[in-house]
Amino acid sequence: MRISQRSFPIGLCLAKTGQTDKLKDCISKIEQRATEEPGSVVDQDLAMISWAMGDKDKAFHHFFRALDKKIPVSYGLYSPIYKGIADDPRFYEIKKRMNLVG
Image 1 (spheres, rainbow, N blue to C red):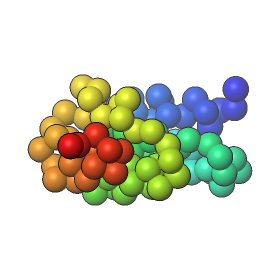
Image 2: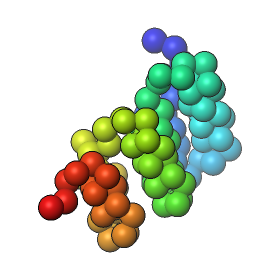
Image 3: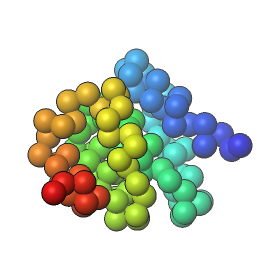
């Protein structure tokens, strides 16, 4: 396993603990993986890290990028990590794009 593949859980912990300097390096590794491995599923990882950092706009940006790439995001949307996500109107848009609303 490459170090960049392990960066996601590390990044999530760094985001939750406010270690922004280390987090920037971690995010850089994740983004590098996206460049080196175009088929990799990093948008979901970046969405979760962004949400943990409190950057909802960036989190939704990555959610929508994941959906554009046909990457399922529904499995994580109900995780306790995304507390409060259902209150954002963009959450409905995600569910709509995945055909989860009637």
